[in-house]
Image (tube, rainbow, N blue to C red):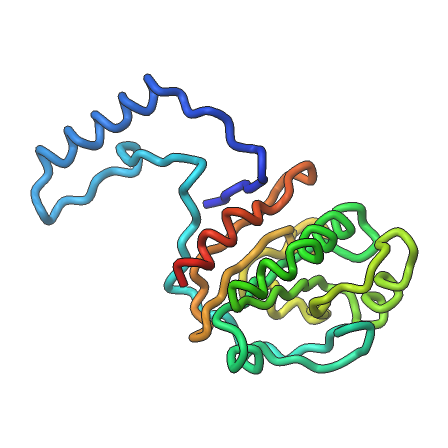
Length: 209
């Protein structure tokens, strides 16, 4: 299941259609016994509030090269949980692409908001740490990120989360909210370059962790 997420991408939900679906769910609940399962077609999903829940997925305790405050270091996922209750792992396609600038700028502009929720954002792509360093030092980005840019050159982390584009070999633009037990609480995938991550939605979820 894919959830497309953007600050302004949700349109008004058709009231008549919503009411019809709600009545269908209520009718199913009246006739099904406790052992029955409501069919997927009967579920009412509000696109403005529904997230993809991956509570059964555990994030790998990856140890990768990264650029942190313009320095190359090794980072391990579990090392962050002594100071933070959650990690948001943002995947982006590759350095020097317009969507990379858009995604990293969005994360950078909301870094203090994440920190206020005891959460550290990580940005990961399949680029090497040297490419990361060259990217953040070129003028088009315009800032040094306050968060690590992580290298998944082997694509092992990307494959674990099943977000490798089969045609390009690059990671799909996505976000995974990971709690301090490494459980993936929610995930979002963007399949359209025109869309951006909804920081409001992410922060609302973080408040429940």
